[in-house]
Image 1 (cartoon, helix red, strand yellow):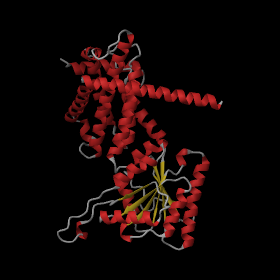
Image 2 (tube, one colour):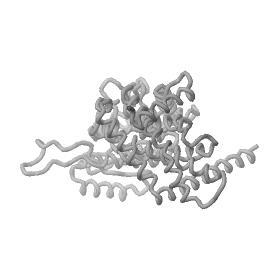
Image 3 (tube, helix red, strand yellow):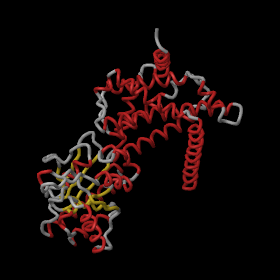
Image 4 (tube, one colour):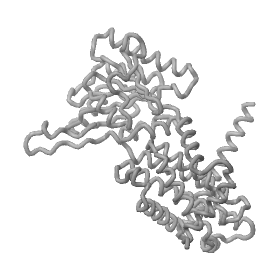
Length: 432
């Protein structure tokens, strides 16, 4: 005999065939994920500094793809003073300046090429080509930022490219912080948006004196988070996807997608369909999971997608058939009529959407941290674990106080979105 969860899966899958007709949920998920990645575009970053400042090590620590391998870069011009790195299917383009410590003519030539690249990108009118930021690297052990380096930074900043000053090789953190302060005092007009001291990789034990603990890497996550603050909204998803140093940055962006989707399903819940019919919400939820996957930048196998979709359908179906949810919600809403039913259905859809989203974020986080492999997700034990995570999130979401807060939050977000749309419409009318 089938247990209730198995029965709900069969019922839901049957209804899904009616909703999707020739498509199946897995195909819809894959299509949505492909669309997300395609629409993500690129984030374009300049990385500059003298030779030996640890730029390559920093790149490897910051990004999930090693696109700066020897030989992969292409010269922007025949002079080879600036090289750009790009990898198909990866949303980061990197421009690397070469030989800034060389003679003045060479430095001017490299700067002219970068400035022309910035202006050409802007003049193209294509946001996907715009230069979004520059990291300027200076090694902590040099104890000096040359005047020509300060001029270089200001020249880039004057062309509307925000600059982050990165003090690398900070084996002595306090010394590096004092050095950074000294730079700011020596060049009060230095046009930098952010500054940070970093150690891109753990210190080698063989380089330490006897009895001295090797220094642990630090600061690269902060650098990526700082850069996210200055990168335009259009490039935010690409940045979150490309960087690997800050898992919290990925989680924050993913949660924003979940909340945005919950607002959508809250509105969809007001559509007059039977409350037990969850199929109308699943396309929206699949799009949400695809968006979260794109932000984490994890290559998801077909077996993993199948596991996720199967678990989602089963748990969502079993939950929607529970009439106790409606009874609990009814106690929270002091008004009557159709609005009550709509709020109940909307809040139910939103809670389930958030539970699925939060559970999926936890799974993505576990994969990113190496606590769970994609291969293991196909196993029964991990499937049960996934179901437990979702059920736990659902239980938390349907607590009385949490429901009150959720309904108020969703209504506030809806109102803000409505006001924002109204303002845009008004602006468009005024322009006409």
